[in-house]
Image 1: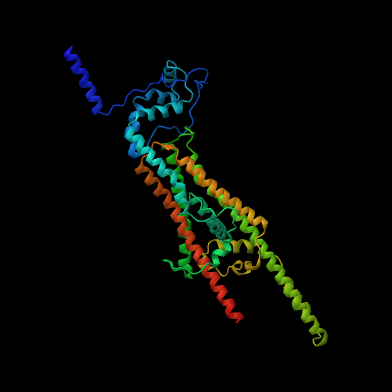
Image 2: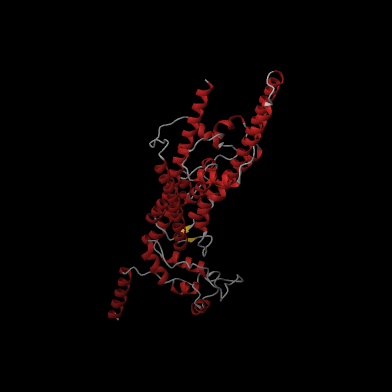
Length: 418
């Protein structure tokens, strides 16, 4: 008897030294009463959960998943024998949640505390990233010159920096801001260097998008959202929503630009009419030749619509030319006396609302993630921040270039008037 007790305590000691986890009480967590049971032949959603974990907690989570929770893991993966085994203890509401509850009940309290601390950091991640990425008015302003690059930047930055709701933030005001100290001095560049910079901008934006997608897919597969256990696409969905946030702002600025353009055209027509009236009065007394008719024909030819190939070439040239080398930004001056209008304000308010909702949605998703520790959460934040910083750097260079061109144009206009 003494030998038997000695062997028993020796086995217990060995199990404790090996870190063995206690068995899971399937019977205690089985469905009771009339609650609906999961379908016996229900197929799991792919990609499967609980197959891999982040490095910091991978060992203990794998031990729990393949140890005391092996039956529920096999049942979740669709093994009918394991599902029959679970029917001995009672009903199962959801095989994914059963495996999730089993792991969380089996791991050590220190591991649970590590995951809880990581969830706090992850919950702050969308708000932190919003301060790294381009703002809504900045993307709208860039879309007027380089729409493809602005689209890539809205896809590469995981979070949107929203404007204040119900407060119109005119993108043109970015061109009139007071001069401030900066590390990078932007100036007009030689053509070859400008082409290389433009090419590098697209490459950097694509790298940011690739990093964003791979990070989000990896996060969705290695973690579990507490309120949607079997779903893996929620982090990727959140990372792609900035496109929806920026679209109304781009539409808002496009409406505003057309309003400014129509105002500019009407002003030109009025000036031409005044000039023609002056020439008509002058010709009727002095000049026998119909000079005003010639002027009218010249003005009519200048107002003829451009051909499609010409417009396409101009759009392509503008797209692949960095803003510091742009010829002019006419809206910088002409928009000063034009009110944005109701539709521009409404569309930008919608964009601001979408930006706020995107941060809220990201907080709800990231703060609910399980099976990730503080170290891995920090690396994850840095990976997301890298994409956001790349997009912010490109946006900074373009915005400083547009400000440079607008100031040069304004300075030349002032000198000509004087």
